[in-house]
Amino acid sequence: MEKSDRKSEILSVAARLFRERGYSAVSMRDIAQEMDMKAASLYNHITSKQQILVSIVVQIAEEFTVGMERISSSGDSAIHQLEQLIDLHIELTLHDPSVIACLNNDWMHLTDSDLKYFLKMRDKYEEGFKAILKRGMTNGEIANVNLEVIMFSLLSTLRTFYLWYGRKKLLSGDELKVQMKRVLLNGIITSA
Amino acid sequence: MEKSDRKSEILSVAARLFRERGYSAVSMRDIAQEMDMKAASLYNHITSKQQILVSIVVQIAEEFTVGMERISSSGDSAIHQLEQLIDLHIELTLHDPSVIACLNNDWMHLTDSDLKYFLKMRDKYEEGFKAILKRGMTNGEIANVNLEVIMFSLLSTLRTFYLWYGRKKLLSGDELKVQMKRVLLNGIITSA
DNA sequence: AACTCAAACTAACAAATGTTAGTTTGTAGA
DNA sequence: TCTACAAACTAACATTTGTTAGTTTGAGTT
Image 1 (cartoon, rainbow over the protein chains, first blue to last red):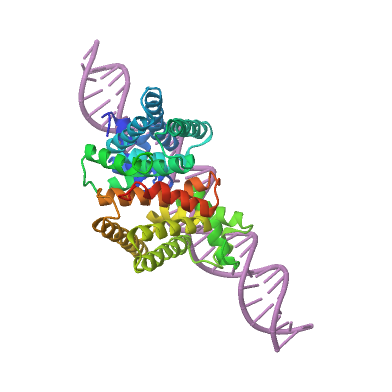
Image 2: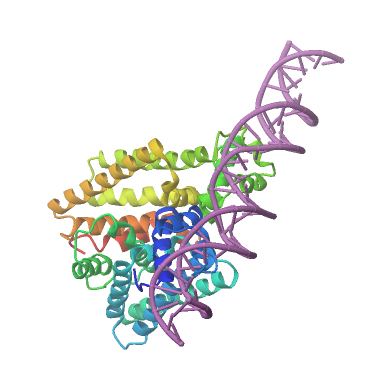
């Protein structure tokens, strides 16, 4: 939901519809109807459908980038850094699940420089993730299993958390964090 | 890839394009072009775009359903049943990643009775999954953590395996199975 | 009262969409 | 050689798409 100006409202509505039906299946008329206006009126606030997508996806991608930079530059242990990453994903997901859905499913509809920028950020994020895991492994904090398998296993769960949070809201945010760390990390920590 | 008759070719090409761009962003002309024909000619083999999607999604969903029935009706231990489920997901993913992508991303474009049928199967699958976990918990085989958290954590990784298998083919199928079980189960098995 | 300006509107556009109708083509069997 | 038929084609269709141009509205300021 975020800010209350008209443009932010559009982004919010669009993100919700994109989540439900996917970017391509949502028309400008769909978005407009949801806002009780005509499609043409949307263009007083945004410049194109494509730009709506870019605004949504790039912004959240940058939040993850910033989060990764903060966490990986802290001097904490690898395990503690992973815990902070889990918190980051859960917090951003709880804050706006639809935006996370767009990030996961609709980035493929970005074009040219926007797509390139997004992919660069995604790569950098995964590199940061791997660096933490690698350090944890040489440390002895983390079990010596295939690094990519560990990373993608963790990331799969964190990235698609929005899917099942939408269906079951059984736990509070803090409880979720605790449980997720238990499930995700106990398979990784050597001593476990 | 599957069978070699023309209809199966169309389904195969369609699945690949749906994976790359999503159902709505792929036109009949796109599919036709990829098959070196005109869009109208497709209708000699299929009855509608919608039917292409149904054929793809329902078939793979039924394969998972059959797999779950076979596994959960075996008398094996809960852990061993989970291992078999991991194998099932990996095998079906390696066999045709694009079809798995459709299952994950494009089921939302099913309509009416097809959607209902799909959702019924999905629910049943997850119920089967939970039943295994529950038995494992009362057994003492599986750690006593929130059941839904465990299930969705496992399923997230298994369902989106096609995403990173597409990017890194670093391990053989058998090695993948071993590593995945290590990563996914060690967090769950009580004794770990 | 006159002016400003954001934000809505109506009307229209070219392009792309899924699909149908009717026609041609090429190959296999009689 | 004639026939049958699957499978391709061309042409067209009604809708829906993103977007633009020009106009109206209504509230705040001078």
